[in-house]
Amino acid sequence: MKITPKNHEKVFAKDELLVTKTDLQGKITYANRGFMDIVEMDEHTLIGAPHNIIRHPDMPKIIFKYLWSYLQNAEEIHAYVKNICADGSYYWVMANVTPSYLNGKIVGYHSSRRSPSPKAMEVIKPLYEKLLQAEKIGGISASEKLMNELLKEKGLNYDEFILSF
Image (cartoon, rainbow, N blue to C red; front, side, top):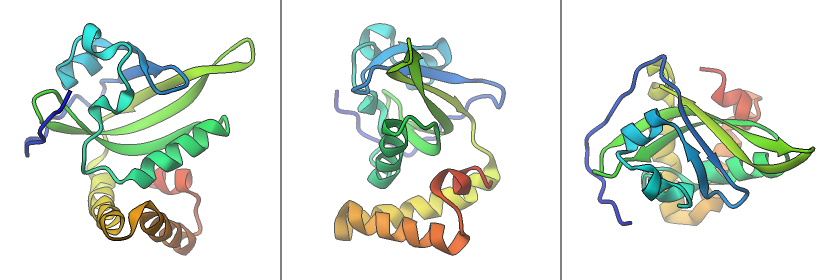
């Protein structure tokens, strides 16, 4: 499914929670009604599809590198993510992604998303633009270097930085 981005932002209620679950490879196994409504995709389209079906091209790849690194170490992670909808619109979320366990073994991942604060967006939007520019010039290693320099300067790890807004 190829989606052409358009410059139209969707928002959702502050008290709404968008939820998905995936298997270990990132294929969607569950999506709640709020998630399906905002992305304008039904269960038939979403279940079994790779979660990156909603990845917006404005998202720096380094954010997903952090995400998978945390999850593969059995750690939860928080991230601000710009996602794309079926009609090309976009929406921002503050995601909390955690491993899902069964009998002590990780069997997938659970993501709960809330509407991000305007204060966070003032920092995240320009940061992601810089990270994306760095990736276009020097690949993911360039954006990782930029992000690591920022974290070092702030004396925080990635998750601490994200939760500081």
